[in-house]
Length: 192
View 1: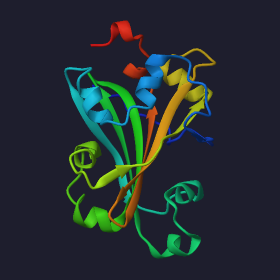
View 2 (view 1 turned 30 degrees about the horizontal axis):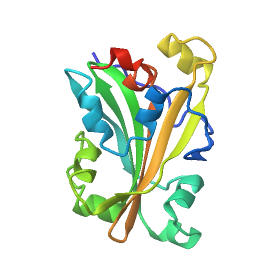
View 3 (view 1 turned 60 degrees about the horizontal axis):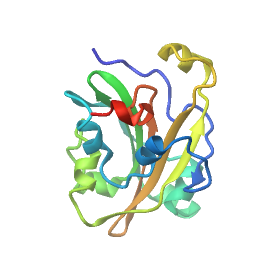
View 4 (view 1 turned 180 degrees about the horizontal axis):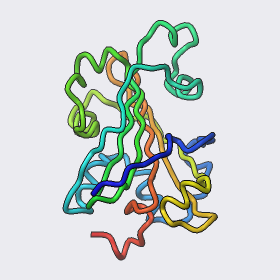
């Protein structure tokens, strides 16, 4: 049975830092945060049953910080339409990653029309026209409700990453929050 996440991404105000600005606690976690390949593919190799749970996909405005990262001017923010897609990536019925994508409406109407619960990564990493920009990282200590939901002790850190993908004249952003049971936090000796 899949667990439903009852918290909005990214769990409150988050400060994103350019790659190299945060001290990542170990090489194993760093390999997950900075890997430029398909996260979906990597997760699929770590489980027997991989699923994408579509939390929501709707037309809405992105946050001011997301627009800045996308390089969208204030004038364009009102003119362009955006889709905000939020999914949870599950491995063996455990929620591993919460992802939020900001996608130009024009891309959704063309290339991503029938995406649904399919992984966005399958489209991005199978098309050489998508160019990933450098990562930004974040680390936070989630609120008490989140810690309780996962049975975690206080001071548990949650890590995430985001990057912009350029595609022709479009820019889209994907932010990924590694949830507590994600393989990114496991010692590499226990990886499949």
